Length: 357
Figure 1 (cartoon, rainbow, N blue to C red):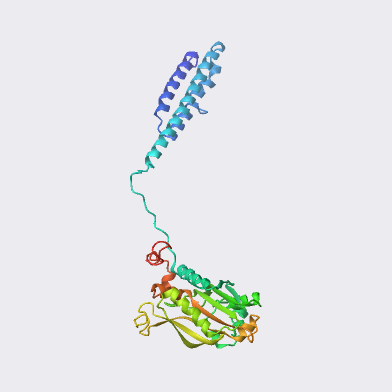
Figure 2: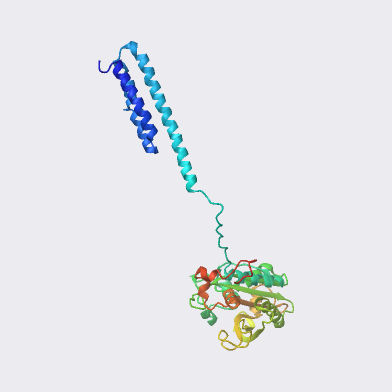
């Protein structure tokens, strides 16, 4: 019989020998899987021999079944061994490809840099806290009362035209200055004396040119106590100018107008480039405008909960961008927000030769 014992035994021996060769020559996972299916799958050559056992005499079935099971077990073992060999070969290839030559020089990462605004902000805080000022904060989304009315700027006041504001509703806006922190702080701390704070933070106005940005940073200063005078204000700002711009820096007060101070002054600092001799940057005057200041208006003191007959105070406000531009010789405010790494790399982290290259 063609499908008798001898024929099936021959088919089994041939399949086992072919399986050994095909498995050994498999060089990929795909080839190995194809070999397994060819011999051990549902329609595999060895599987079909096992299904044909019913066609041989009963006395021959045990021996043929034993041979078929041994052949199947051998092929399964060969497939498992070849699979491990392929895994090891793949690992060797990966290790060789990813090998690191430890004799090569290392790659030195570029250090991060501080933004000039961050440096100027930190320096302003350092100078004023060294003089005993406390750092205070306030909300960026402000009410019209705190942003304008409490600062002696009623709804019909022409000074509002100087600050193009971003309003959400007629009574809620993005703050145009850090001055609202003055009143908020006084109202939450009355009757404590002295009130001695600076309030740095972001402010928002509808400006956008070489010297203005719609989002910028200010620092407000406030000192309220008994017997505070304009001389105290000048002394504090003189110390700030020398600490920020060098021991030879000088300040100059010019009469001005702000609704929340009376009297008011624009404060200039001697030109940081020419030292006051006159140059292109200062327009030949030897001076650069840096901030506005004055004695706190009595109405603002009352709105803060203090009696102007008993206490007095001074206030000042400066743009941190302006401070940074004068300190580092930056002539376009848009450089501070452009994200140009060539510009930012000029500023070094603390401990690497100062805060400017």
